[in-house]
Image 1 (tube, helix red, strand yellow):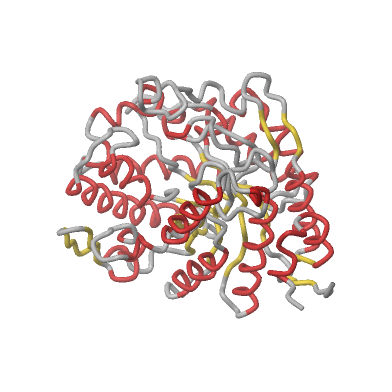
Image 2: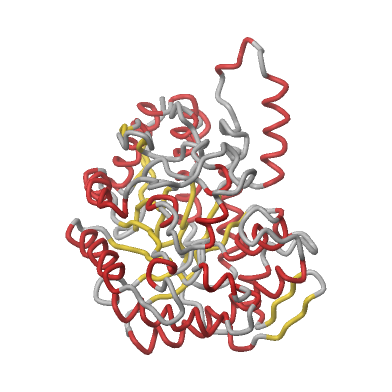
Length: 429
């Protein structure tokens, strides 16, 4: 077998990613808390409950797991509804709890990346129209100012929004997130107001913290760039100073030069997923069922590393530093995940080797967790988690990723050990 090692730059940030509701459970003051209780909104009929018990303190043990596995960074979010449960009330003890988390990361030598918004809103904000309200940007900017001012000693990497494109389309066009609308015009207005909110927060954050870096993450799926799809409308507005979505055309010159880095969330291209689903259906019940699959258990994520290269090429045109802010797949058996991880890290190395300005990679996710409209049905964690007992189970993919993080590399020995099924694809003779 050929021997080789693909090395990454010194200082490359390897880590994992989470979201507040997924690991803390929904805040009782959030729009998601009420939404998840209504029949039909969550695939498996579950709710977030206490999720991974982070709000009860289990973040400490999970941060230990990240440290023991050589993670250099961790992406997490703070919950707006916990911090501002009412328009005129700020919960300082909740802010203290997030401060304790960030200090805990720093004590473990882990760099935090904090998202200010990951899909959920305070209930009071939703009741006044949420992101359709013309004052939404002002409310968010004040929230961002307070959070950054309180936590700036412990974090310099900030995301205003996690996947605003996905949020707007799910909540206002597909109707799968609260408020459950199917209104393209409303989705466009939401994207405009979220873009304005980022720009307003950008100025406040930089006034408070000289070393702050503020970006947002964007889910890239390839098909999102098709005419009228609208999936790339949010990030492209920051290049053009103009947001175009459906029939909407809005000039937003304040967006230009108000983005320090771009986060890319990548799971699979839509066209690859469609092809892989068809292939898997053909093979069901066939003798070669045990062969390497090209689609995850849920049939929602194809093993499509070429798509990651395309996503990075797409992001490169922004001429900004990039982070892969989420990449992973669901796999309760932990076979598919190891192959997926190896091939995607190899694709990432390929682009970094060609000087793409990617500064870090965050695997989705550290542990199994509550997964929004899919509930507890999908297992994304490097660690398995039983939500009833809160027992964590270390998967082999955690060991594999720990070696990548420790050595800043992907080697033929690692691939031979953890996922020999894809060895010839990564190290051809």
